[in-house]
Length: 254
Image (tube, rainbow, N blue to C red; front, side, top):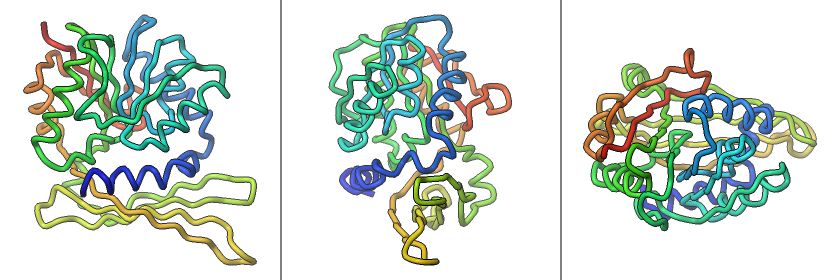
């Protein structure tokens, strides 16, 4: 999957991304509480380098942190910047590839990369480049916080689909689901991302978007993060963190 096709996927999805949540504002608040507990007492200078439409960044800004958002998708980053003040938060954003972050070195206390975003980096050099940039912009002793799908289990079972999600809109229910097509290497998979919305009469209007992900295991991620200059790596499962995905935290060495 090329950079442009990943960007196109999220540019297309940005106007509808909130529809994957039954209640987006409730999810913003819940995720901020879960991640905020891992950040510790603040306020912190936070970079959300895969901010999307602002689900984590807005909540952390409302919690009192000084948050900057960046995202590969300029459409998503622009929406995040607009959604924040509508909720009483300030969130400057930039369109940026996480492998080439447009920030000076050591300027942040925390770097967040959530929602399985790094899985769109499909090669080891790309993952290493992104983590090197995160290490560059976070101060010595600063916190790295990554969230991923539970790929250890997923790679064992190789499911063909993700569970559907249902939300309510002004014109009825919206159903979101994914079909997964695994590559021969058993690690990467193509996603067909379906959204069904009420159409004419009893019909449904269907929108399909496509992208590719790399199902990195915890062992693979641990090796990449350690190689980028982070120490004190800790995995936090949803049962203990309250976040919907496994979370990896690490400290910048130095």
